[in-house]
Image (cartoon, rainbow, N blue to C red; front, side):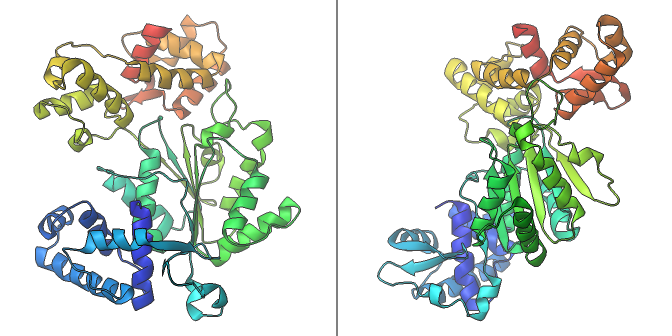
Length: 446
């Protein structure tokens, strides 16, 4: 079982004993115990007294002991949970709530819909969400998402950035830490996009509702759920419903009704939230009146955290920060280059840095080729011109060098900014530059 399933399993056991869900500290204790941490280490990580962590853990063990009918303590906690879940079946009831039922018992919860606790039942479907084995940094980003969703009840949020920057990982971490905050959590990927009609059918099915016809009635069903329960819907890989070879964020004709749906999310009164994860900024995050229809976009930059290279097998830890800086603190790019350093430089970071050049592997080219194919001809022309300059360049300079209209250049620059391929200098917003790794790709391959 992954950490999400473990947390759901333990949360249900605790809920049956106390009528309360796990709090944030209990979740952290469970995660760290499964990672092999001691009370002292957990206390150090989260700035608690070691004795307090021990007391909270023992309270947790007592509740689990009562729920499982067998003693659970510090020494047997991990293997007991793993043994119980392996030797038992996890029953997904009509409400999609994960529950524990020994193999020799037959669940009778289908006959207990009248039970008072059913009103607090959960519909959690995270089957296509990623498994998070390690998570570093991003504390401020997690706090912002919590603030937007839990404190401010923002209905529409975008998590944006380059491929591999950590968007999906960040959202999954937020979900893992806040499972009990939402009656409904559904994670869906649009890597292979489906029509809005089929997506709504899917969401209603997870909530054990038979979809009506036509789509207007389905939407009413869905928004009734959004009003009556606090729901969190995550749509990953949103960029796949946009048109290739045009400016960023333009919908393919068959997915145009997603635009209407996202507008409805912001305009209709309810208590739920939709998180969009995308490589391109969605138009709905830009054009809406922020005062009337509050939305939030969180644009992720690199992860400047030395621990990102832990467990990579690299040597010369004193040189890690220099390597991280060279590759813009980008987790996926650092993964690619770490493999190269192990294969060619025997893991010696210092030897690799002596090359004093920005090296791109075949993996980089594959990633950047996919980005390049999404661009319009105007964007490509602008990028190639900027890449030929050693210094940042202004819009007026670009205009002088290219046979493009002023409107084309303005729209192209805006689109490239929405794809996070261009940056404006902090001290002078009139100058544009390309982040160095992609600039090197353009220099070498185009």
